Length: 390
Ligand code: ADP
Ligand code: MG
Image (tube, rainbow, N blue to C red):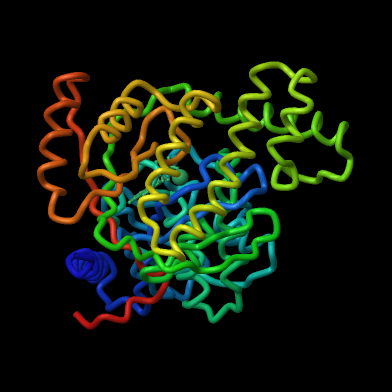
């Protein structure tokens, strides 16, 4: 599937710059199996890179300026690398300017380059097209100018670029885009950045995302509110249990013992976080033992928590998961990503995918008047040079 994307990007580059690209980079989006709203709470998450990518074509241009073309938007811009990098009014350019600023600020030396890029990651659906963009740009510049940057640092620089753009994201998206491996999920400790791979053997089940096609405007304000609520909750826990440093150290019983010391809202938020961290550990055990039924059950529990306790779901996502619960072909389902729209992740019995898609499309359109979209997911490698020959 990415062959076409690689060919289109290469052809576009050749037409725009009259030369063959020196480097072709593929940078993937990601899914997260379980561990939602946990990366900024210093717990564990279980993401994986996917087979949907941004393809970049690069060459050095022996000047101090870089020219970058976004094929999908039919837009381009130029940046003078000798001048101070400032935020622009054109959103997509800021991710690239942010990356350049971070690289320069951390002492990495490079000169002008030409770049063309195009993607098959749906934009703004929670598959982290933004992280793929940041990590692919950093990786491409590193390859082009022989810079030594470790994978972990590519992720951190990408995250910092996104913060500069104005999104206070955790590290998970960039980390999984860079560290992805075919058929492996990554159990990432968001506190220490230690990680381990687990086999993504889902046996008789396919991973399919249902894109609700909605994005409610509450997203940004509620995201920031949740971060503050969790900080407040953690400080209350620490007051009563000074030995606790982060949510992962707190048991459910400890939290229950101080329930009266906090508002109902704060209690609900951090109860979700503590349960979700323990679900990630259970999910890894389930995967290792090949217990996909348990994994699916954990996904349903996560959704319940996100909807009722963390309160970041919406009618559309709740309906998709409630319908999935009643469907014998679906073993697990939950909203994935920040919430208030975006996708649900579903484990569907192989061979039943089309029936399920037809049923959900019909039901969703009837209820909300909106078309549901579907993405079939394969777990794939992280940001890398293209190695396939055209
Ligand atoms: P996502 O969940 O996809 O990461 P975000 O809102 O975080 O959603 O990031 C999407 C933004 O990333 C877009 O608005 C755009 O600025 C940039 N972006 C992603 N993919 C592309 C692309 N193919 N071309 C240009 N810009 C892109
Ligand atoms: Mg993003």
